[in-house]
Amino acid sequence: MKGSGTALSSADFMMSAPRLARRLIGATLFVRGVGGVIVETEAYDQTDEASHAFGGMTARSAVLFGPAGHAYVYRSYGIHWCLNFVCRETGHAAGVLIRALEPTAGLARMIARRHLTDPRRLCAGPGRLCEALAVTGAMNGKPLDERPFRILLPNVKPLVAVGPRIGISKAASTPWRFGLKGSRYLSRPFPVPSVAR
DNA sequence: GGTATGATTGACT
DNA sequence: GTCAATCATACCA
Image (cartoon, helix red, strand yellow):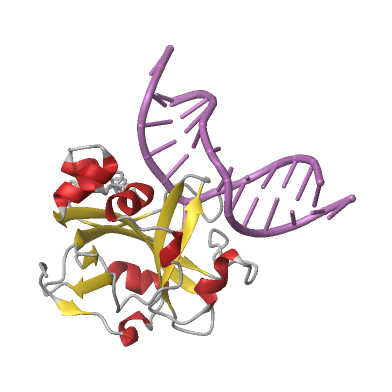
């Protein structure tokens, strides 16, 4: 299998969502051998109004309340799939949305699935990434340390950009979006930090 | 039973 | 920049 780094164990998901989201930048994700370097993530937490776990467990969010280290896959806008990693620090439900990858393996299959050749747009967004990696609701609740998933942590600590999350109306200013600094594979650029005056 | 909403994307002005 | 697609989910009657 292509990709360098240390394979994740279930203990690696026992931390807060923002911490895991930051740590996953530079990690490598494969689904049935197709994937690349994670360059963008977002953290969601039960105490956070923007989270599907806010307000308690529902049929959809049940996986977020289950064991850490599993995939939470949900349908977005009735059209797209979105992939999250379930994590846990304290008792409450939390997860990390995988928003963008730099494709490195299985380019031909991604191009066929996306009907698009530009590698910069292949996995630049949560719905695009799931289409390229063929992630569907059938993977909801599946453990991340088993097939079809393979996740490797980076050997070197990358420079990480931080900013507000995308596409939410509640808790819109919480800076829980993380990205690989300078990456050309982000779903959107990070806002330039404003200078105090 | 009905209805409003959305952790998005692609097409279009 | 604006807007529609498209439907599971959540919530209310």
